[in-house]
Image 1: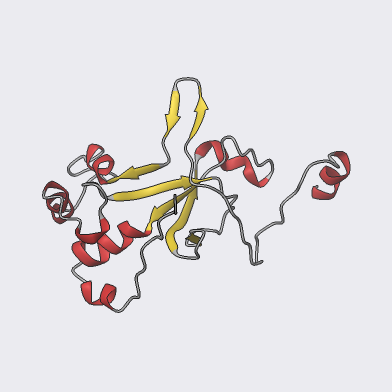
Image 2 (image 1 turned 45 degrees about the vertical axis):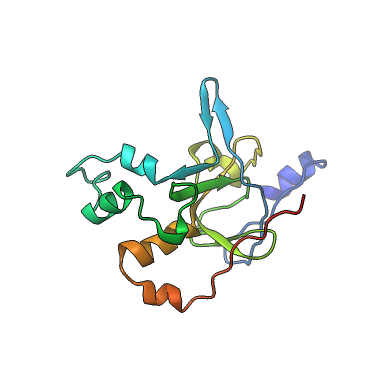
Length: 170
């Protein structure tokens, strides 16, 4: 199948299959517009999680402690501007089996973990369209917040050598 595509579309760049192979991909954190009237920003935060909260619901129920941390804005050093980042999307080309893959910034710092693709990008194994294909990553600050503040396992975070993003020089 791939060989036939490569013969027919000689000018197109094809990407290797990630099954059982090491794969490196790059992209940029970026929202997108999947269709008329819909726009997805590049990030979500804990406010959005709270907006979806439905007590007792299988998918959207939340632990009381998380609700309390949010109501007090008790995000520790992981929040930014009074908000707690949760997820972000980027133009990285991923495939099934990439869940848990690290997302690194330009300096090699861990900034997130890949876990899914947007609905509009599920066809990207066959046809990658950079205008709508996005992978979804959990922000590492949210992971650290959950470990430290929610789970009370600050001792684990204390064992880590956390670095903070370098600011761009103007």
